Image (cartoon, rainbow over all chains, first blue to last red; front, side, top):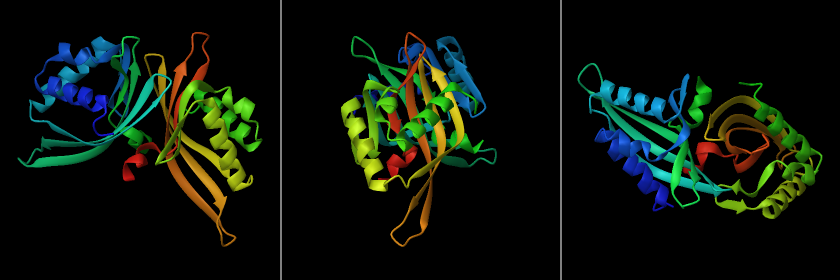
Length: 131
Length: 131
């Protein structure tokens, strides 16, 4: 499971974000995909998703480090539900480093040519219900 | 959000299970949908899903009561990721009642005629990573 092709795709997305290569990143999203930016803010469409990732990247000034952990993928009806442990490291105001672990949920769609595109990117997982 | 059409569909599925009306239940699943029966067992296709629900229903002998709680739906690229609090009540061996709360994750696909069909039914949510 940890060698599922979607792991490579998600890791390629992380590298694209780190490199601020938003063209490369957007190639993995469906044109009308949705991104949960914060629990109270969902944006839809590549233009809005690109803008959100750019703002997140600017905010963290390249100091956000993302590590992907355990992965589960459930495939059904040409869709895949990905459940993935994600560890985030970023600086706090006091000069230290915050480490936060999330369980993300992503929905990918298999295209007719075999490529997987992200339809829904919800890095908050079921914690959305905490809000 | 709690009045999203998918809430009505999920509640109709619960009623169909309670009534052992598996024909009605299967009308809400894509032909090649996937069901997480247990964290270590995923079945695919309507015939296998129907068999799993029949076995679950037989096991609990109509003593499983399901209550749906808070709901979040994120729609992208004609898919919907549903995150739902589910409370289960069932008898234990000592004559008491067990209450278990889960945060389920479901993927539904919008069909060209507007109907929603379940593609992936994972009542374990991100707890799949605990296994």
